[in-house]
Amino acid sequence: DYVFLIISFLAVLWAAKNTSKTWMKYALWSSWILLTLAIVNEKFEVFHLGELVVYIPAIALICLHLYNRKYCQCQDESCCAKG
Image (spheres, rainbow, N blue to C red):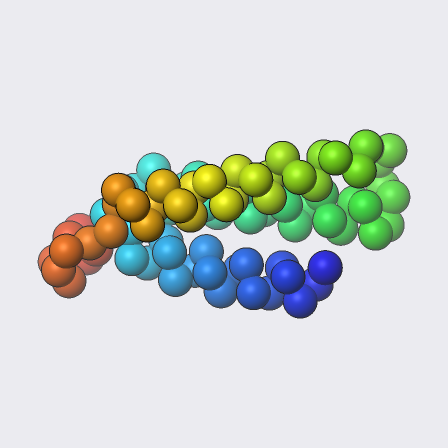
């Protein structure tokens, strides 16, 4: 789980730097944070949540990555610098 979190962190970091939409950065980071909280909660059982709760932010993260790759990629360096 922790290796997956590290890999997904790097993927979100790269995607957030290269997206042309500001809202996409917030959506990607929000999904990653929710996924991290769900996985940590599952390991330490802070709150009793169903096992399926982990899948919601994971699926959201996957869908956001796919949407970002299709519709939000920068065509040149100037669009990503604007934010």
